[in-house]
Image (cartoon, rainbow over all chains, first blue to last red):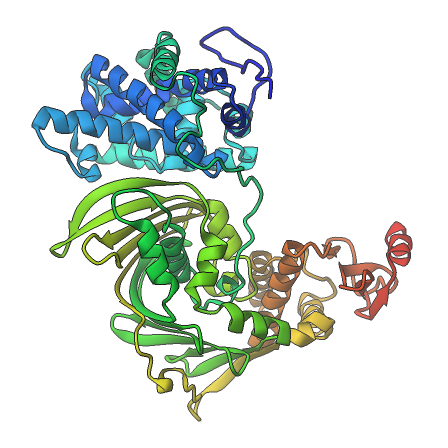
Length: 186
Length: 428
């Protein structure tokens, strides 16, 4: 399968937006370059997830890189393309957790992730917001990150994730409500 | 109007910045690590399932579908993941003929918090029994009885019951699939999951996996009884976790978080106390409806299939509404429209008396139509434009197994016609 360049706002390469599923099928068909598009698509989201736990930009980059490599290695085990984003973010969480564990000299249960404070390189307000974003449900988190961190439109998020525009709209709406609650509690 | 929160999120995105070196570095590592090996090395390449999953109809007959989903997710997760021998776990569970478990269900439905405990017995030979408790008081019992071909719900507080007679085909399916873990494994062994690693539950070392699959839940709840019994339309977001005893390989706990599509409902389920391959006493499924219980509704799915009960239910609605049919034929719309009629009549000083039997029949009719859609039987409903006065217009139709269409006209006549005749009628 010939992979077209996706619409990538931060890389200036504007062409046809391909869904995660199409890209994954391309990778599984042997087109390794298609995975680079997925990396560019989710780079910021994955790094945000890692930063929220590690509070260290360089370690977050390492964790993100590790997560992408692991995702590539395990890609064939992913059965539903629409779940790629949440699945990838979980791998990123696990990779960041491993680094947290290395720091403490032990591995940690995943729930400990949420006790860690978010990235220290952001100002306090942004730290709080990022900490709230990573607590969202997986699908909401993916929609929020793609929409606001990576600047995709709702329609584009729908195309990427294979959901309907209505579903993405509702997920974002719910995410807003949850975020307001989480921020109020923080 | 732009939301301040949205601006803050965008600011955060900008602050995170882009790392343009990430993709080249990742691809470089992949190239160095894997060389020319294809991505599927060491694994089995699979085709993605992008459509709705075809689910066992046992799910559609579950009395409390959310709980059964939990079990399904348990089975679903029995894939080879390394660490715990998931293959062995799967094999062991596949031999189980009966299982009991307890579920604590909490959540919010239409703004109301709820908390229910459900104790379930699931037997491949006999069916499913679910006893629901609130504040330790038995409030509801639901029996799916394979031999009798019945789905019976007892509301103990009100001393009411509903009885749904299954079609022979449905009963045979229940008998074939009900509680048979092998069939469920075959049906549900799909979808992505992530490994959670090890943890400890009540002193037991466990290993877990997490699964999210809204399509699974949507499909699982799509049957005539499952969705009605669950009381909600669709679950959109699902996060399920399964924890298995590392030493024995048996599942010990499962948690399930479901968010409804309406944005206001959430359900959280914790399933524990599994007794795998439990001995089930025969009396557990010997249902005797107490003499002082009154029937709330009796539905015959065979008659629903023939259109007879659907006509009865639609006629009742038209009478109630003063000459219109439900605008949409979905359970949620039925409830909403009946509620609106009730409020309107009440506000006008009337004392409306609702026929619960008919309203429940209407809901089953709506669910049945949705089921027809799931089965590819091309149902169409025109209640938004067709009234009882439109004798010759098609109100509802669906395709029969022989290729003809069953039509319910505006005047509630039932007729089976060829596709050509249907096209003529609908052209009018």
